[in-house]
Amino acid sequence: MRQALKIIRDEHVALAALLHALRRLVRQAAPAPADFSLLRAIVFYLYEFPELRHHRKESGLLFPRMRARSDEADYVLDRLDAEHARGERMAHELVYELLGWEQLGESRRAGFVEACDRFADFYTAHLLLEESEVLPLAAQLLDDDDWRELDAAFGENRDALAGGAPEDEYRRLFERIVASTPASVGLSPAHGPPRNGG
Image 1 (cartoon, helix red, strand yellow):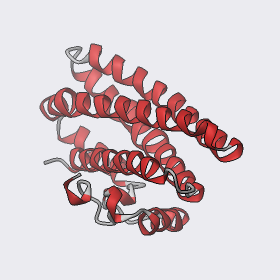
Image 2 (cartoon, rainbow, N blue to C red):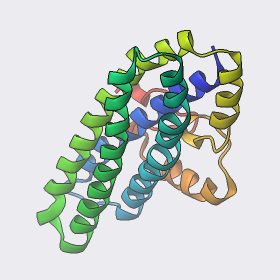
Image 3 (cartoon, rainbow, N blue to C red):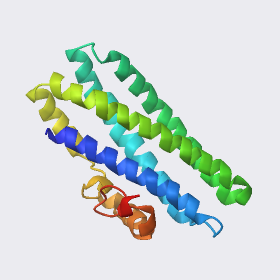
Image 4 (tube, rainbow, N blue to C red):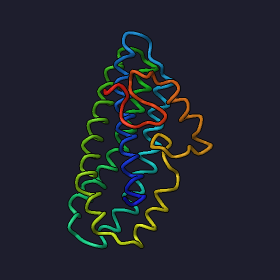
């Protein structure tokens, strides 16, 4: 498998696991006080890596190369580009709802839980579309020169939750999330699928 495809798939698995962990963590918080420091760290990580790094490389590097080779995937690439923009807006909503809950109390918990569910449902469908349609087509369409450039680009700034070495500025954030997330919500440093089968 091409290195860039493996990195993309690993980062998809990491995102799915983190979303799963966030959903379970929020539900486990009730009725105990929420760990807002941990929730802020997770929400920031969700915005920083999938939105600002992973998706920008897909939309800015992978998709244009695919479009240059064929118009076969234009309809799905147009949709995914639009979803990348929508995902960034949804991440802002997640931040807003978390701040509302933290600052105004339990009356705002439901708004954050609903935003988490919308975000997780949206990304589950988004990742499935990329995995089932786009990545197999990319493997067919792109040549060795394309993959050399994509491998190099996706090899930079690796997501630590997907097995990359954390960059110095993100090391504490990554360690905080992994160390502070209860095992019962399914996140581990080696990451992989959620622990305990769940």
